[in-house]
Image (cartoon, rainbow, N blue to C red; front, side, top):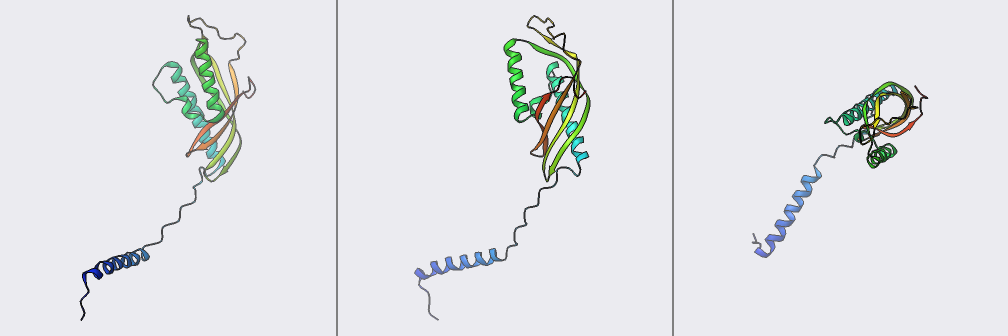
Length: 179
């Protein structure tokens, strides 16, 4: 039997390893297909219940912020126009050296329309908020709350899903309408 010269052993070893790898890989199981996105909610009722819970948590975070308590940042519940509006409002209050104190209370959360497509959710609702326990204070601590301000404010909100969580995308004040 002829002996292989050492110059031929290395290429043959590389070929053997390569063929072995191909053989092993060829027998590897086929990767599992990616699962379809799971619907975020089984029904509109479930989506609106989660939306109301999100809005109430947002309201509670705002109350905690005004009280100076350590809590989630209310802006964590906002995206898009709603987030920009809140940033603008905070900047305005700071520039005018005024602050809002007290608590607001969600009186009602009325469902509107909803679109649920897989994990994507978009919905609208009307919210009525009691602001009677809040005051606007100037730098000296003087109450400068407008005397004509109503105790209840209606808000039309739009919410959308982001990374599996509902977020407030738009807020539109309706005055006392919606309450």
